[in-house]
Length: 453
Image (cartoon, rainbow, N blue to C red; front, side, top):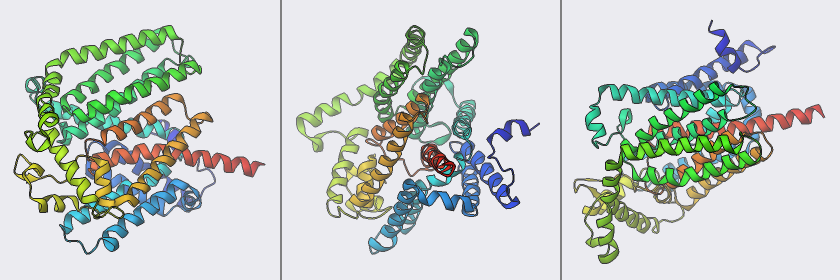
């Protein structure tokens, strides 16, 4: 009975050796564990990642194909630079060695997306499979947290990060789920799908209900950075889907208009339900920013926004001291502690361990060279994705979702730096893995066509 749902996700292994088949099954098992636990449990996700890495290292086919990929070479060179920065270029700096070693490891893990990409690329159904498992595990964690929480306090304005404990990351992942539901709702409107009106209405309705569920999560996180990122991203995703409408991907304008009206009604309901939480969270900053603009940053009271401004000013100052190579992985906390300034201490007690800005954090730790590596990787991914979309290798639904994620990340990174936390890293490995997997598949098809010629 288990053979039917599993078999379509397994690569064709007819005529393969037992060793090859064993590696494929180990890799698929690791992918399943990793995706399901990526936003649920660090232990389960690490086991899955270890299985995928082991199977990849022992798969000769992977080493014949991956080194030919520009993204793979860029990822390997990025890992080499991070290790060189830690153990050679900035090894003489004084800092907390445990923090430096841990963050060096975390930086390396961010660049391991070729591992997930390889196993996703083994079968076309694994794109949706991996994303679905990630959202399923995430939702399970939310439901478990809600079971143990005081719902009255939650609706009354208590900030929460659910099973993560970190409200910002929780809000970000809810925003990712919202993008997924928007793209899925548009997909159900595809006229090529053989669905009755009732079936189509039910599927779109369920998708919009789930969208409302995750919208509540974004509100409960009370992360203004995530709110801003989502507000910027939604028009981009909508514009891509509208282009798909003109290109004939989705149904006629009247039907899409009705669904859009329903979606706006759902959004309005969510805003009205949480109006007090939203307005209080936004209004908290008006008075403070007024003081900053009129009297300067040093005269303004310390709150979450002015803390960020002080951290950004400090980060720019220290980065300019070592602009090319930076201070090395994990040095931010030591540098902030050495400054020993009240404006750099959370509630006047503990020093901040990051700058609340991913771009400044990247420059401070890895310098201009590290920034160039990250921009190189991002450019390769977006270019590959756009090229595949233009060649109709990627549907407008996947394209809107994936590009939406890149926009979400780019805006979110302006106000926070949680990219080395386990749940954000694992999300990134799945997202980047899906994009890179499409590049691998495209290359594999080109090779097949060349051999046929």
